[in-house]
Image (tube, rainbow, N blue to C red; front, side):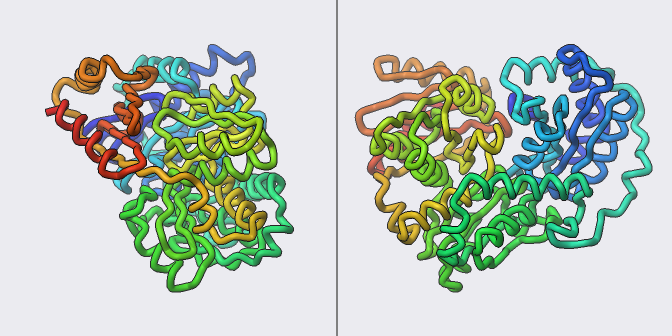
Length: 468
């Protein structure tokens, strides 16, 4: 089975390509990479995981390998990816290793590396880490450490600790929630007394999400609250997977529905009518709120909707910068431009006041503050943003791989407005499309956007025709 290794880390199928041996090699390779860049000895590393059942055993192997390498490890247990990223900086670690496969199905798990600044390594650093991992011998037998058999804590609630979360993790959760609260007018949101349906898909972010919403005075209907990793539906927060959330919002008469992915770095939104607003609106709504209070630059990747451009154009002193797809690329552009907000069209929002990782808690807080400030229902706010139709397709990689497909697209659209910074993006008078290989799955992604859905679908079909 395919093992994905790239700028977004490592992902594979548990027991096939994602094994204890690979986790140990990854830990050793990351330590070797850091040892060349840090003068501190021993290295201080943070370890965390999402809620997948395979995570406990893999984490035990990871911690055992770090101990054998002479590192000091801080184990947070089950926490969200943005919480872990913030904790790396707060605890002055040299880096972090997360066991998460994000939105991938339950049979997957993955390894994500964090820099000392609590963000994903850039492409150059990621390539160097992978080179170190490949250099580690794969021949040594793996012995399960005793901690594999340790049972997770049984207590519930953020103050008492969450299942699978260590005391250090519980403190990191509290600090993360408090930091997000400090970025919004909490009293204004509390006064609105919103009712929110939160779908945490039995992932790592449910405890943090619930704590934030309750601290903002919301009445919360919580779906998929327990961090069991037994996903009640396909975990990617796209429309076809969130029908129960939409129906629950309608039935409960709630003001909004929020859907996290398993590691809680992405958020999809449902409005008060039960309509799936979607992931693309997550960044646009956050940008509308942040830029309205703190005008400046926003950063979005090449695959993100033009909605954020329209939002910025309506606010004096604001502009949008574009980056290659990938969290690290967005962050690099944010740093270079001093951006006050950034993110991607997959529901990921990055607020530099919190950290350099996409954060579903940030997105929830910003959406609620926008609703409270405007004293308008979510559907009305969404309707005020110029609407585009965005169509996304995923195709298995055909023979010849990504490069051959991109070359065909470049040849076919050689006279158009083209960006080949990341795959190929073609801008036309009637819309745009972007073709690229996924960083996390063995697939080709095609995204097209236009005012008319039929136009976007035809652009997708044109690209499919080139693939053959």
